[in-house]
Amino acid sequence: MAVAPLTRRKAQLELLTAACAGESPARVAPRERLSGVSSIDTHLALLERDGVMLHWPSLDVDALAGSGAWVDVFFDHEGERFAFTAESRGRFVRDLGPRANLPLLKLSLPLCVERRQQRAHFRLSLAELEPVHAQLAGMFAPDTRIAVRLTEISTGGMAGHIDSPAASHLQTGDLFWARFQLPGHAEQSELAVRVTNTRVAASESAATVGLAYCPGEDPVNANIALQRLERFVARQEQRHLDRRTQRRGR
Image (cartoon, rainbow, N blue to C red; front, side, top):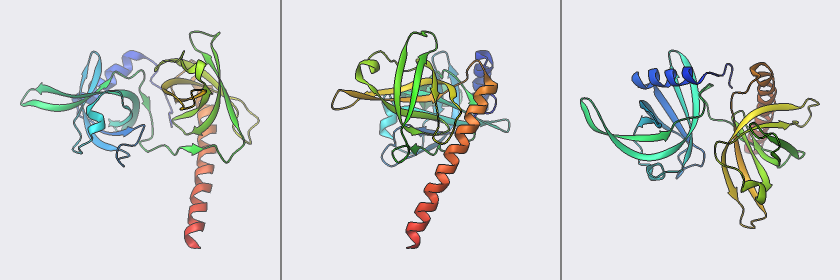
């Protein structure tokens, strides 16, 4: 859960520089599971002008050797935990002093770095709940409005269906205000979100969009909304676990 976003870009880059210099341990969680691998342990290595370098994972993960895979990166630094989302740029080799020709995983320079709990997000499917709709308003283009029928929600982001024509106007990294109402809650929630991916369905009449939460202009109200969402997801996660336990006990 984000508790105090690093809102200044300079502070984020200084944090990444220090974490790379100290080779902070990191966990890489691909947005789409790779051959049964849900997360990969490694270390930060180097911050470059256009990206972040991590030590190449000990696992042979071919999908990360190419470009285009979106990942969540969780890392520790000075007793705190942080996270960012980035796109894989593939496998590179750098000469880091005595460790010549060291294989590294290069990621795009993240748009934001946040304090977070280092744990996998429970992705709550909304299929069994009442429909949840979100309205997206462009952060830098207020006239841009997109309706999303949410299908998944977690403490790290959300996903849902939109019309294909709307998807054609979206690009990875676009920023929006997302307004939505959780089932059983009278309050409206509003969070700043970043587009992480879009995919047009086979029918070409609908598309899916992935959104990650990011710092906004009002951290106080954002934290209230995030805490409300975290409690909602935690309750649903517990119900999910209780049902699994009951099924196993039969």
